[in-house]
Length: 172
Image 1 (cartoon, one colour):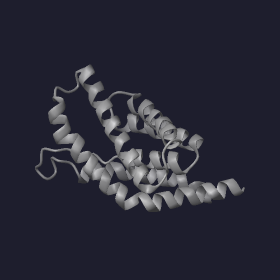
Image 2 (cartoon, rainbow, N blue to C red; image 1 turned 180 degrees about the vertical axis):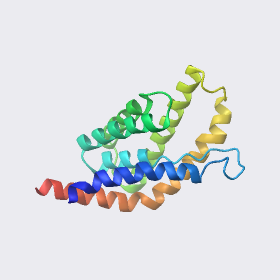
Image 3 (cartoon, rainbow, N blue to C red; image 1 turned 45 degrees about the horizontal axis):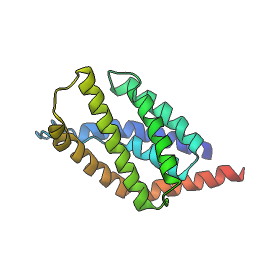
């Protein structure tokens, strides 16, 4: 039964991110900025830092593929970005301490990197004509602030859940 907790958590986070994207939509409240929840990236980052790298890479690939199929016009963007982010996070965390502050900052950094990479790809493919300044002010900064709130709220329980499941799986 405990083996189902991580897949169920991943599914809840994936679906919850879609619901929250609608709740925080700038158009819903008459605003112009975009608040994009990246709970999936937060989950992958914390799974990479506090769980098994192999499991994190697998979930990064699967969730990236699901993200591409469900939400984007271009297949492969998140399927590539999520596992690369997990890999880079695992390499960076070998150097840094894995406390909640560092983990949260690294997660925010990779949310920013993924947002900027997707923006650059959309510019390259001609899907957007927004300049980087507008992108930064209207999407990147609000997204980072929203996800900072999510990290503050979920970091400790997420870390504890992942660590307890890792300890349980090592004991078997």
